[in-house]
Length: 594
Image 1 (cartoon, rainbow, N blue to C red):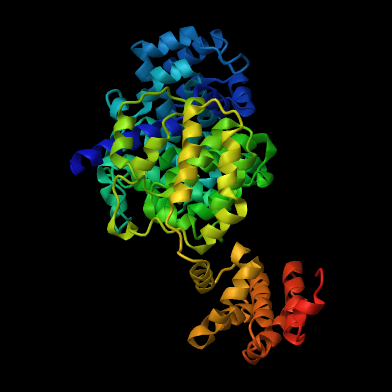
Image 2: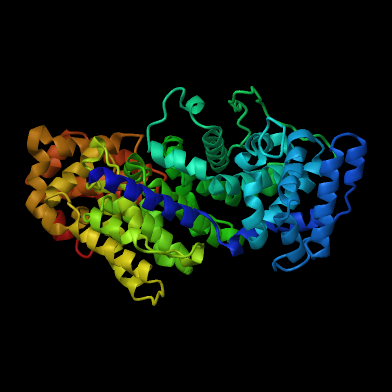
């Protein structure tokens, strides 16, 4: 029974991640039909010159010219609307369809002139951006289909990856190659089956060689995306293509086109990178790699709408939250999300859920929070059964049945995941400060039409209420101090807490008090921790009999006075008050309204 349930939840996760990571027709068209593609396709281009130069075979040249003339006759030169191109669709459905796809792949494989490569990329992106054409043509580029019409040992993955990773190829070439790779990897059933049947093993030495070529490509795309998000150029100079035929290296596009450097396209780098990352994170075997590359730390800033380019804000927020959700299926990644930069991922996801106006953005943010904070579902079997009997349409705007992911995400739990129900002090503090329960309540009354979103909100609210939290206020405070990172949780500002628990700071040879003073003296802690530590030492000094003398003996006054010139205003203010409390005998009688 357990074995059958495992495969049922894996099947559920496979379907759900596929539906949420394959963009709908509207999004696909916007990604493929930017101004540069329209400009490229409007220009007159002489493919016959490449035939005469023996760079393109006569057969390929005739097929490409035939496709472009048909597309242009249908209004497919980039100037028309997004309506399906009937004649072009009929052409791709004919016996020439596979051959036309192979002709464009031959350009990627064999031609190094930038104008030709850009023209071929623009055509393929336009093709994949048309919903009707994409249904017919996308599979023609997959190696298992393309190998029936080509003699080349360089398949689409190798050809496109070589274009994508070389920083000298110009941003247009690299961006469009990454987009096409994302579409092909999303369509590949063999890759999906390999990923889900193998599970989420840790990356080991030699793992790259043991993977299929498709999985190797997905890993390269993941590394490329992470490198760009981290401020790199995505060149991946050490990348080689491992295969039996020995084909490797990268392809550099030679002259002819405009020199497009990444710096001139900064507004497109982040949207491209996060879209590419979302396209590969649906595959289980990429998640440990992405987690180990520090993805959550790089995703977190993209969840802050104030730091995202307004021109692409909604889509970047959506895909960043989507990446956070997909990555949260990995148990170690969930724990990482609770620790990175004081749970900044959780903070920003809560902020997105509170402030986003688009329903799809709110939905995926809530799903990510649910996975990260709730962990396993209590009713795994029932949810899996419910998931297996529910159907929905593909597309961002029609996402449904999000209860399935939590079951699927934890259908395979390991022995190291026993404490997945413990958030830790930082995440607990984050939830308390942001009042996540209240956020769920407010969102449930915003009039969302999606019943599944409302169901997710209800499940998240109930899950937060049921979570196993640390038993008492003191134990929670003690754990927070031991973590070495403090925030303004209720305990710090609760008068009753200090009145009742202040004596415990002196237990075990003043273990907690010494830790607070050590934080004040350290140069390695953040400003918020310094401010809270100063506040807590001051509270101890005023509530514990002779507390100010004990704290001073342990070096509190020296540490606090040193912080009075700190660059952070909050630290300066709290250290000043701390010094005053250490020097004044009856602080509570003279503090007044202060």
